[in-house]
Image (cartoon, rainbow, N blue to C red):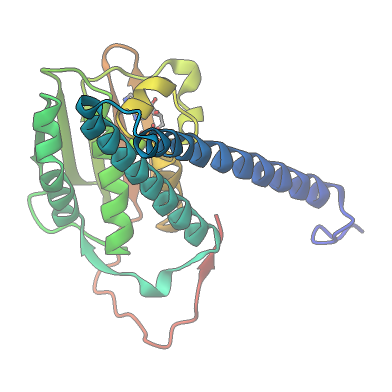
Length: 262
Ligand SMILES: Nc1ncnc2c1ncn2[C@@H]1O[C@H](COP(=O)(O)OP(=O)(O)O)[C@@H](O)[C@H]1O
Ligand SMILES: [Mg+2]
Protein backbone atom coordinates (compact mmCIF):
# COMPACT_ATOMS: atom_id res chain seq x y z
CA UNK A 1 0.00 0.00 0.00
CA UNK A 2 1.25 3.45 -0.87
CA UNK A 3 0.65 6.35 1.47
CA UNK A 4 -0.04 9.37 -0.73
CA UNK A 5 0.99 11.76 2.02
CA UNK A 6 4.37 10.02 2.34
CA UNK A 7 7.23 12.39 1.56
CA UNK A 8 8.96 9.72 -0.49
CA UNK A 9 5.93 9.35 -2.74
CA UNK A 10 6.64 10.18 -6.38
CA UNK A 11 3.64 12.43 -6.85
CA UNK A 12 4.41 14.46 -3.72
CA UNK A 13 8.05 14.84 -4.75
CA UNK A 14 7.02 16.00 -8.21
CA UNK A 15 4.59 18.50 -6.73
CA UNK A 16 7.23 19.79 -4.34
CA UNK A 17 9.72 20.23 -7.21
CA UNK A 18 7.13 22.13 -9.22
CA UNK A 19 6.38 24.44 -6.28
CA UNK A 20 10.11 25.04 -5.76
CA UNK A 21 10.57 25.83 -9.45
CA UNK A 22 7.63 28.28 -9.38
CA UNK A 23 9.07 29.91 -6.28
CA UNK A 24 12.49 30.35 -7.94
CA UNK A 25 10.87 31.82 -11.04
CA UNK A 26 8.78 34.17 -8.89
CA UNK A 27 11.84 35.46 -6.99
CA UNK A 28 13.73 36.02 -10.26
CA UNK A 29 10.75 37.91 -11.72
CA UNK A 30 10.32 40.04 -8.59
CA UNK A 31 13.99 40.99 -8.60
CA UNK A 32 13.85 41.91 -12.28
CA UNK A 33 10.62 43.91 -11.93
CA UNK A 34 12.00 45.85 -8.96
CA UNK A 35 15.39 46.46 -10.50
CA UNK A 36 14.07 48.22 -13.61
CA UNK A 37 12.32 51.13 -11.82
CA UNK A 38 15.19 51.35 -9.29
CA UNK A 39 17.75 51.66 -12.08
CA UNK A 40 15.68 54.44 -13.66
CA UNK A 41 15.31 56.26 -10.33
CA UNK A 42 19.06 56.04 -9.72
CA UNK A 43 19.88 57.25 -13.23
CA UNK A 44 17.65 60.32 -13.03
CA UNK A 45 18.73 61.12 -9.45
CA UNK A 46 22.40 60.98 -10.54
CA UNK A 47 21.72 63.33 -13.43
CA UNK A 48 19.98 65.83 -11.15
CA UNK A 49 22.76 65.52 -8.59
CA UNK A 50 25.55 66.06 -11.12
CA UNK A 51 24.11 69.41 -12.14
CA UNK A 52 24.37 68.31 -15.79
CA UNK A 53 20.61 68.18 -16.28
CA UNK A 54 19.33 71.17 -18.24
CA UNK A 55 16.97 73.36 -16.25
CA UNK A 56 14.19 72.58 -18.74
CA UNK A 57 14.55 68.82 -18.11
CA UNK A 58 14.65 68.88 -14.32
CA UNK A 59 10.89 68.89 -13.75
CA UNK A 60 10.43 65.91 -16.09
CA UNK A 61 13.22 63.94 -14.39
CA UNK A 62 11.59 64.53 -11.01
CA UNK A 63 8.21 63.40 -12.38
CA UNK A 64 9.81 60.24 -13.73
CA UNK A 65 11.45 59.47 -10.37
CA UNK A 66 8.09 59.91 -8.71
CA UNK A 67 6.14 57.71 -11.15
CA UNK A 68 8.79 54.96 -11.02
CA UNK A 69 8.67 55.03 -7.20
CA UNK A 70 4.86 54.79 -7.38
CA UNK A 71 5.22 51.76 -9.68
CA UNK A 72 7.48 50.11 -7.13
CA UNK A 73 5.02 50.73 -4.32
CA UNK A 74 2.22 49.21 -6.42
CA UNK A 75 4.35 46.19 -7.12
CA UNK A 76 5.33 45.69 -3.48
CA UNK A 77 1.65 46.05 -2.43
CA UNK A 78 0.66 43.36 -4.97
CA UNK A 79 3.46 41.01 -3.85
CA UNK A 80 2.48 41.47 -0.20
CA UNK A 81 -1.17 40.70 -0.98
CA UNK A 82 -0.19 37.58 -2.95
CA UNK A 83 2.02 36.29 -0.14
CA UNK A 84 -0.80 36.98 2.33
CA UNK A 85 -3.15 34.93 0.12
CA UNK A 86 -0.49 32.21 -0.31
CA UNK A 87 -0.33 31.72 3.45
CA UNK A 88 -3.98 30.64 3.38
CA UNK A 89 -6.93 32.80 4.09
CA UNK A 90 -9.36 32.10 6.90
CA UNK A 91 -13.01 32.32 5.88
CA UNK A 92 -13.80 33.15 9.53
CA UNK A 93 -13.29 36.79 8.68
CA UNK A 94 -15.97 36.58 5.98
CA UNK A 95 -19.17 38.55 6.37
CA UNK A 96 -22.36 39.04 4.39
CA UNK A 97 -21.48 41.39 1.56
CA UNK A 98 -23.81 42.83 -1.07
CA UNK A 99 -22.18 42.09 -4.43
CA UNK A 100 -24.14 44.90 -6.09
CA UNK A 101 -22.66 47.46 -3.69
CA UNK A 102 -19.13 46.12 -4.24
CA UNK A 103 -19.30 46.39 -8.04
CA UNK A 104 -20.92 49.83 -7.90
CA UNK A 105 -18.21 51.14 -5.57
CA UNK A 106 -15.41 49.58 -7.65
CA UNK A 107 -16.80 51.11 -10.85
CA UNK A 108 -17.33 54.49 -9.16
CA UNK A 109 -13.70 54.64 -8.11
CA UNK A 110 -12.60 54.00 -11.70
CA UNK A 111 -14.95 56.44 -13.52
CA UNK A 112 -12.28 59.13 -13.75
CA UNK A 113 -9.81 56.66 -15.24
CA UNK A 114 -12.42 55.47 -17.76
CA UNK A 115 -12.96 59.10 -18.80
CA UNK A 116 -9.20 59.55 -19.30
CA UNK A 117 -9.16 56.51 -21.59
CA UNK A 118 -12.34 57.74 -23.35
CA UNK A 119 -14.10 54.54 -22.38
CA UNK A 120 -17.74 54.45 -21.30
CA UNK A 121 -18.10 52.55 -18.02
CA UNK A 122 -21.61 51.48 -16.99
CA UNK A 123 -22.98 49.28 -14.23
CA UNK A 124 -26.03 47.07 -14.45
CA UNK A 125 -26.70 46.41 -10.75
CA UNK A 126 -28.82 43.57 -9.35
CA UNK A 127 -32.55 44.22 -8.89
CA UNK A 128 -32.38 43.25 -5.22
CA UNK A 129 -29.51 42.74 -2.73
CA UNK A 130 -27.19 39.95 -3.85
CA UNK A 131 -25.56 38.70 -0.69
CA UNK A 132 -22.37 36.62 -0.71
CA UNK A 133 -20.17 35.40 2.12
CA UNK A 134 -16.94 37.22 1.50
CA UNK A 135 -14.15 39.47 2.56
CA UNK A 136 -15.38 42.89 1.43
CA UNK A 137 -11.84 44.23 0.94
CA UNK A 138 -10.71 41.23 -1.16
CA UNK A 139 -13.84 41.50 -3.33
CA UNK A 140 -13.18 45.21 -3.82
CA UNK A 141 -9.64 44.32 -4.96
CA UNK A 142 -10.94 41.62 -7.33
CA UNK A 143 -13.38 43.94 -9.12
CA UNK A 144 -10.91 46.81 -9.13
CA UNK A 145 -8.44 44.59 -11.03
CA UNK A 146 -11.02 43.38 -13.55
CA UNK A 147 -12.51 46.82 -14.28
CA UNK A 148 -9.06 48.41 -14.39
CA UNK A 149 -7.97 45.91 -17.06
CA UNK A 150 -11.19 46.37 -19.03
CA UNK A 151 -10.45 50.12 -19.18
CA UNK A 152 -6.71 49.87 -19.88
CA UNK A 153 -6.86 47.21 -22.58
CA UNK A 154 -9.55 49.06 -24.46
CA UNK A 155 -9.66 51.72 -27.16
CA UNK A 156 -11.11 55.24 -27.26
CA UNK A 157 -14.88 55.02 -27.76
CA UNK A 158 -14.99 51.51 -26.28
CA UNK A 159 -17.26 50.37 -23.46
CA UNK A 160 -17.02 48.47 -20.19
CA UNK A 161 -20.15 46.95 -18.69
CA UNK A 162 -20.20 45.61 -15.16
CA UNK A 163 -23.19 43.54 -14.11
CA UNK A 164 -24.27 41.45 -11.14
CA UNK A 165 -27.32 39.19 -11.02
CA UNK A 166 -28.69 35.98 -9.59
CA UNK A 167 -28.32 33.05 -12.01
CA UNK A 168 -29.53 29.56 -11.09
CA UNK A 169 -29.27 30.46 -7.42
CA UNK A 170 -25.71 31.72 -7.75
CA UNK A 171 -24.49 35.30 -7.45
CA UNK A 172 -22.80 36.08 -10.74
CA UNK A 173 -20.84 39.17 -11.71
CA UNK A 174 -19.46 40.00 -15.15
CA UNK A 175 -17.02 42.57 -16.43
CA UNK A 176 -17.35 42.86 -20.20
CA UNK A 177 -15.32 45.12 -22.47
CA UNK A 178 -15.19 45.95 -26.15
CA UNK A 179 -11.43 46.24 -26.01
CA UNK A 180 -8.39 44.60 -27.55
CA UNK A 181 -9.25 41.03 -26.59
CA UNK A 182 -6.72 38.30 -25.78
CA UNK A 183 -5.33 35.82 -28.34
CA UNK A 184 -6.87 32.34 -27.81
CA UNK A 185 -3.56 30.67 -27.02
CA UNK A 186 -2.89 33.13 -24.20
CA UNK A 187 -6.23 33.17 -22.38
CA UNK A 188 -5.11 30.69 -19.72
CA UNK A 189 -1.65 32.19 -19.31
CA UNK A 190 -2.87 35.69 -18.35
CA UNK A 191 -3.69 34.36 -14.87
CA UNK A 192 -0.03 33.48 -14.30
CA UNK A 193 2.08 35.77 -12.14
CA UNK A 194 3.83 38.46 -14.23
CA UNK A 195 2.42 37.19 -17.53
CA UNK A 196 1.43 39.96 -19.95
CA UNK A 197 0.24 39.66 -23.52
CA UNK A 198 1.75 42.98 -24.48
CA UNK A 199 4.56 43.83 -22.12
CA UNK A 200 5.09 47.40 -23.29
CA UNK A 201 1.39 48.35 -23.11
CA UNK A 202 1.12 46.87 -19.62
CA UNK A 203 4.17 48.86 -18.47
CA UNK A 204 2.87 52.02 -20.11
CA UNK A 205 -0.42 51.73 -18.23
CA UNK A 206 1.32 51.05 -14.92
CA UNK A 207 0.56 47.32 -14.81
CA UNK A 208 2.49 44.90 -12.60
CA UNK A 209 1.36 41.70 -14.35
CA UNK A 210 0.02 40.44 -11.01
CA UNK A 211 -3.59 41.69 -11.18
CA UNK A 212 -5.18 38.59 -12.68
CA UNK A 213 -3.06 36.23 -10.54
CA UNK A 214 -4.42 38.05 -7.48
CA UNK A 215 -7.95 37.98 -8.94
CA UNK A 216 -7.82 34.22 -9.48
CA UNK A 217 -6.48 33.69 -5.97
CA UNK A 218 -9.25 35.83 -4.42
CA UNK A 219 -11.89 33.90 -6.41
CA UNK A 220 -10.44 30.61 -5.09
CA UNK A 221 -10.52 31.86 -1.51
CA UNK A 222 -14.27 32.48 -1.99
CA UNK A 223 -14.92 29.15 -3.77
CA UNK A 224 -15.97 31.23 -6.77
CA UNK A 225 -15.54 30.07 -10.38
CA UNK A 226 -13.86 32.46 -12.76
CA UNK A 227 -14.31 32.17 -16.52
CA UNK A 228 -12.70 34.24 -19.25
CA UNK A 229 -14.03 34.53 -22.79
CA UNK A 230 -12.25 36.70 -25.26
CA UNK A 231 -11.93 37.42 -28.92
CA UNK A 232 -8.99 39.33 -30.28
CA UNK A 233 -10.06 42.72 -31.59
CA UNK A 234 -13.60 42.28 -30.23
CA UNK A 235 -13.39 42.20 -26.45
CA UNK A 236 -13.19 40.24 -23.23
CA UNK A 237 -15.72 39.11 -20.63
CA UNK A 238 -14.75 37.77 -17.24
CA UNK A 239 -17.45 36.03 -15.23
CA UNK A 240 -17.17 35.38 -11.50
CA UNK A 241 -19.77 32.98 -10.07
CA UNK A 242 -20.10 32.73 -6.29
CA UNK A 243 -21.51 29.67 -4.51
CA UNK A 244 -25.26 29.68 -3.87
CA UNK A 245 -26.18 32.06 -1.09
CA UNK A 246 -26.96 30.39 2.20
CA UNK A 247 -30.43 31.50 3.23
CA UNK A 248 -30.94 32.59 6.82
CA UNK A 249 -27.28 32.11 7.62
CA UNK A 250 -26.44 32.02 11.31
CA UNK A 251 -22.72 32.23 11.75
CA UNK A 252 -21.31 30.56 14.83
CA UNK A 253 -18.79 32.72 16.59
CA UNK A 254 -17.02 29.53 17.69
CA UNK A 255 -16.75 28.15 14.19
CA UNK A 256 -13.54 26.27 13.49
CA UNK A 257 -10.92 28.08 11.50
CA UNK A 258 -11.04 26.88 7.91
CA UNK A 259 -7.67 27.52 6.37
CA UNK A 260 -7.92 27.44 2.63
CA UNK A 261 -4.76 26.88 0.71
CA UNK A 262 -4.44 28.02 -2.91
N1 LIG B 1 -9.75 42.94 -20.35
C1 LIG B 1 -8.61 42.64 -20.98
N2 LIG B 1 -8.50 42.79 -22.33
C2 LIG B 1 -7.35 42.50 -22.98
N3 LIG B 1 -6.23 42.02 -22.37
C3 LIG B 1 -6.28 41.84 -21.04
C4 LIG B 1 -7.46 42.13 -20.28
N4 LIG B 1 -7.21 41.84 -18.99
C5 LIG B 1 -5.94 41.39 -18.95
N5 LIG B 1 -5.36 41.39 -20.17
C6 LIG B 1 -3.99 40.93 -20.51
O1 LIG B 1 -3.55 40.08 -19.46
C7 LIG B 1 -2.32 40.57 -18.90
C8 LIG B 1 -2.29 40.27 -17.41
O2 LIG B 1 -3.23 41.07 -16.71
P1 LIG B 1 -2.91 41.55 -15.23
O3 LIG B 1 -2.50 40.35 -14.46
O4 LIG B 1 -4.03 42.35 -14.73
O5 LIG B 1 -1.58 42.43 -15.40
P2 LIG B 1 -1.37 43.98 -15.80
O6 LIG B 1 -0.67 44.54 -14.64
O7 LIG B 1 -0.49 43.92 -17.02
O8 LIG B 1 -2.69 44.61 -16.04
C9 LIG B 1 -2.28 42.04 -19.26
O9 LIG B 1 -0.95 42.52 -19.33
C10 LIG B 1 -2.98 42.07 -20.62
O10 LIG B 1 -2.05 41.76 -21.61
MG1 LIG C 1 -4.16 44.48 -14.47
